[in-house]
Length: 432
Ligand SMILES: *Cc1c(COP(=O)(O)O)cnc(C)c1O
Image 1: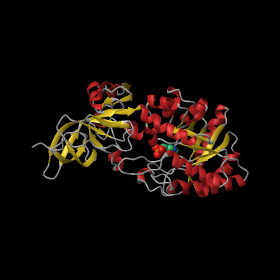
Image 2: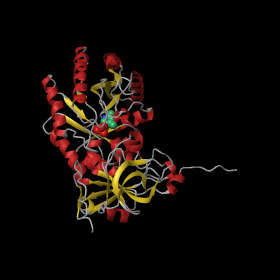
Image 3: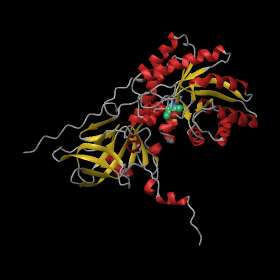
Image 4: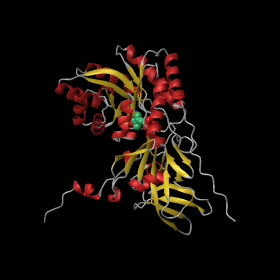
């Protein structure tokens, strides 16, 4: 007696990624074909899903004084930056390396905001020469350093001060950046003094104010709380004769990894803009820096099951992807769905810990997942488009994965698999 085949899992929140005739597809391409062609581990993205997410934000911003600045750190691959640049997005960068990426992808330096708690002078110079829109400055010390560097170049640096509004974003502590104890930003109590000081520095031009309270926030309240605090500050600062052109509210909405129900970009932005309007700031330029929600659910990490093994207590599926490829589970105990490329009938389903080959007990991709597996099967770790490849490392001398962008029936290799030769190439042997 054979059981009927189990229905393939539904993948809500993952547009353009679905099962068709028993195969997991990204747009019109079965991921099993991609594994055969490009090998594993492999990052796979849907162009349509990225563009749809970007368009959702553009639609929400339509007709409003809103600028969108994609947070490059979420996924900095050139082809992905190109897609966003073509749609008119600007970029939020946190390093000179990210600036170089944006420029290489055809991004407009005039739409770049430079965030980060520790900018190098060389990075400040590169950003000034490129003509970035704004430096999001995080300390008094940085104000003075930027003023000096700008003076040496004979330029004026546009600045916004990143304020820590001290609200609890109620997300994972590692991605909560607006707590009182956080290293980020200028404490709100010191903001007015910082603005007064900045106004006296000859090579700075104050253009705005910004905050970023954290990532993967799935409710509106923390954003609204932060906005209210920012508006209080703006009143205070402008009362002292300093004009602010824009307010930058930081990253975008959280995404659905499991069963979260984050607001849509339209609902989220609508609520914030409404609050601004009600407070008499409807005229003001507003900036948002979404990262995760643009690319997160547009990507997956494809991996092959190398080995199935069991201890007395547990079953393990050892995959060829590991924490160096996808760090979020190890770093944040993050949960990401893991689904088979070609589901089996479920008769041999077991509860597996899906782990990588790296020599760390923290090297797991998912725990206690009910899967029906054979060695050689392909698994897809979903919601891997953001903070996946961008965080990949070479730990255990593992070359980084390749990346493919699917566009309809086409698959573009947008990053070749790294080689061990490349890894060794930077190193110098001792000569005895
Ligand atoms: C990380 C970061 C973002 C992006 O946040 P998401 O949650 O990915 O949208 C935006 N702004 C700053 C300053 C950041 O550090």
